Amino acid sequence: MALLERVGTLLRANINDLIEKAEDPEKLARQLVLDMENQLLQVKTQVAIAIADQHLLQKKLKEHEETMNQWTRKAELAVQKQQDDLARAALQRSLSNQQLAVAFAEQLENQRVETEILRNAFDRLQQKLHETRSTCEMLIAQHRRSRTMGKANASRTVTAAHQRSTALNRLRSTIQRNEADNIASRMMLETDSLEDRLGALEREDQIERLLEDLKSRQPRLT
Image 1 (spheres, helix red, strand yellow):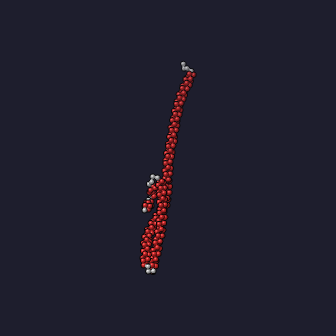
Image 2 (tube, helix red, strand yellow):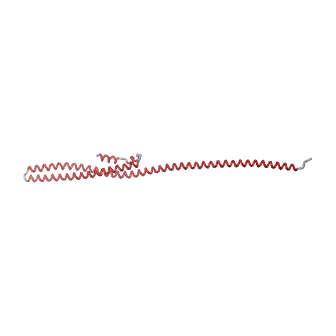
Image 3 (cartoon, rainbow, N blue to C red):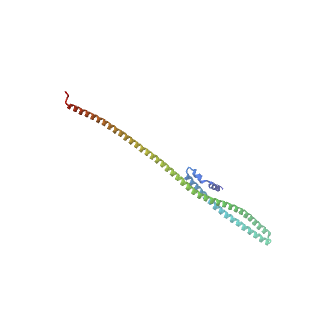
């Protein structure tokens, strides 16, 4: 049966591999569950039909067995009445129903086997569906967690890069400030040295003037 072949394919499917290799795991997981639910519904319908057919065959078998027994009793009655022709006709009917009963018995046995196969398929597919739902929920959660962690890692990478950039900018600013301070300090030192030299010249000039003044006040030697 095509239905049982489809069910067999679903039962043999490795759900983990299918979902892990899918481009969109969540979409595939939902599709797998939906397919199994649809197949399970079809199998359930076929099981109900098979059971109904089995009951019908049982009913037909019982009817032909009862009819066969009725004609057998009529043949016995005809024999008791020494009505051989009627007995033969009754036995013919009895034999015909016996053959039909045998045919229905064979069909009934085949139907019982088919019904059992469908029931087993239904039970296995129902269990597979339960396992698939659980597996899909777990894998979807893992997939979402992986995506979230990936985004978080990317965010941390950007943040770290930004922090490194900020730290480098702070370091660059510090170096620039230090360089400016050093330049200012050198300028101040150079300014102080210039003032000192000019001051020394002024003092020397003052001393020279004082010396000349002293000399000018000394009596001249004759």
